[in-house]
Image (cartoon, rainbow, N blue to C red; front, side):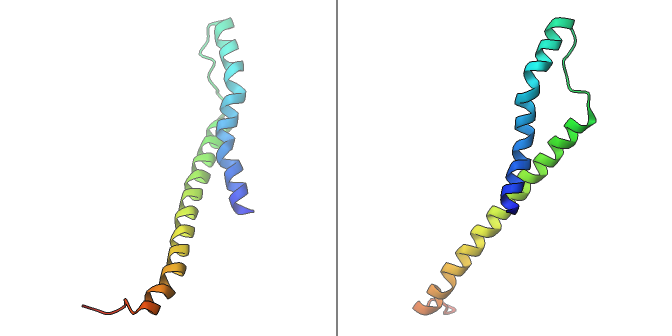
Length: 85
């Protein structure tokens, strides 16, 4: 559930860009303005999306390392590879 929520938040910035780009370009072309987003909430969404993406990366690495430890731990001790040279 947490991973799905983080993925939706991470994709929020991309969806916001694709939803607002055509409208911004239309305004810029019609009224000779820059068409940029001047709302503070757009920047907040970008920050939250980046933080969610970073958290997803960290969770993925921690999960992969945990799986490696669980699978490599008993196999190494069963074969006797735990000797110190």
